[in-house]
Image (tube, rainbow, N blue to C red; front, side, top):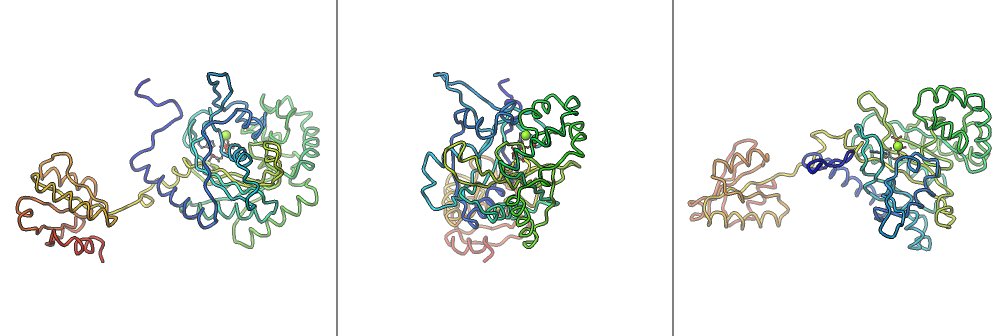
Length: 418
Ligand code: ATP
Ligand code: MG
């Protein structure tokens, strides 16, 4: 117990952490370019927020929430997703009085009680963007384009963009009636969960992973074919613009997304991993969420992206941050002091430096330099302390050259290859 993290959680460190840093730095780059601003909301909210936002019948609410009661008996829930907290914060902080749309992003741990497997954890991380206050299909386009550019910047191969439209409230309620009728004779064949969905929200049956349920849906009517004029036009427009932008997509009429709050556009970026199709980024438009949750009638669009799944896909040598390290070995207190002095000057110039703080003999120090793949090494022993001349060794080529310990500027130029 004491030496094991809870099931479904992992420690992130070492080389994996470097991949995270690459992802995080790309996030900063792209959010700057699209002028999307960061928001950080609390790790837990009143449970009701998530129930209202994701819907009573969603998997999250029915099975996956980490809910706890505090000492006053309040029901609080660890964030299972990022949107609901942002919507709450948006209204509470009156962001609707600022310029619209507000383009926000978050990177946050999320918590869901699920069966852990590759790429599926109980604590995982989501990057999400939310464009709040955009009724236009061009908002959908920018959000999709953002996701596409981001995945491309990470060199993710074989990305497929799947899109669909779920219509607005009107198309949806009409369609749910139609689908309910269609499923009437098949209810007994559906899984237990879908029997429930059939009553509460038939469309969600499309989201079931059970093969029998999928089989029963093969000839079912699809909402995409039954959209009203406005929704249908928007969906055509979206496809038209994506085509013009050269963003390849496929229409997946079975795509309904797991959360109840979506309207009109929904989309997923998927890719292959170990022969399986996995979703890495998923989102859509949610035109009623802000009103229902927080009483502000603003239309919005966004996506959520699982960072762990990205890490699985880019966990290779190339994507690690490689910064050149200079190892300054030393002998004796005077040598060590000079090493610190020189190290400080190099670090001030942005160079990564390691010195001996483990009291190793010089042989072991150089072994350590090898182990950490230092690009250069310098050794400061008694002679070097007196003469202020030392050798700079390029650890890749083995080449050595004399350098002056008092002329840090020249040394820095050499190290930087200027
Ligand atoms: P799935 O069908 O895979 O369970 P979902 O519909 O529950 O996905 P969303 O709620 O849309 O997923 O979350 C957005 C993204 O967050 C997913 O596409 C996925 O990359 C990631 N994600 C969701 N649940 C987990 C989890 N338990 N562990 C790791 N990543 C997750
Ligand atoms: Mg899920």
